[in-house]
Image 1 (tube, one colour):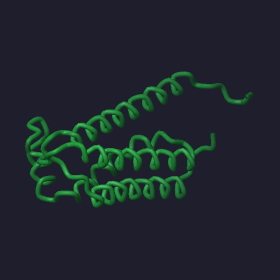
Image 2 (cartoon, rainbow, N blue to C red; image 1 turned 90 degrees about the horizontal axis):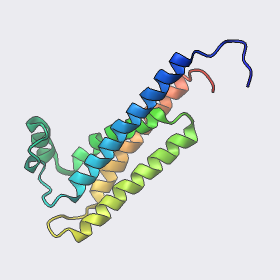
Image 3 (cartoon, helix red, strand yellow; image 1 turned 90 degrees about the vertical axis):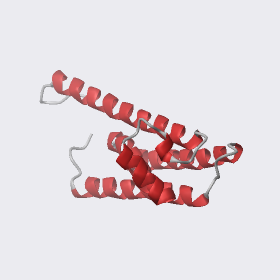
Length: 144
């Protein structure tokens, strides 16, 4: 594809590293979600390396903590997806992950699979998706 403007390779490289870093943050978030979902105790305060204020809040609010957790988990992937259908696939994939993690809890004796965990997790995903779609609608940016 020919353009009249020269390509700034520095800018292209910076954008690539930003995308790689963002996806890395998202991958860390998925690993954390898997760890917290399959650990033997549902108590968040049992995870000593998480900040106390966070674990205390999560233990008090129970399944509701899935809403902000999965809303934040979706953001790196939604920000990297350039098209609406790609963002829809991200949300579908993460919703599948939420459901799969709850199903896995059926085989962990000290855990209970709960449909409300799936509901609040998917609600967080949808909230992030709506916010990102609104941003893309109001401020579409350059077409690629």
